[in-house]
Image (tube, rainbow, N blue to C red):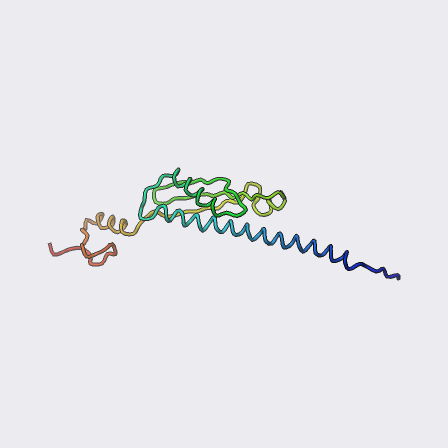
Length: 158
């Protein structure tokens, strides 16, 4: 059997080019994971702050604010659309993330054909209002010493 000599420069060029693509993919994947995490956590935070203390905010205003708030923080994704549905005691939002990349195979691998959808929800109830409503239903009056915690019970001295 005859041995052939190989060139280390040629072999290193192949290995180096593969390593560069792997590093590029890892960096891109980490930015995509960052965008997904930011969309969920900042979306939840925005809904909490917008509806704090029972504030009345319309669906249109929530949608515009959520789009503006999220679009400032994303690195490589774009917002495909934000849909907000406000119920009686909760708000639900659906955020679509679109990956802006030129390689369709990688785009479909990360987000699927229609993009990645992130679902957010927030309850709009506040504890003092619920306690007060329960006392009104029972026919009891609130004691001035109880600050929404039920401490003190009702005033039976009258």
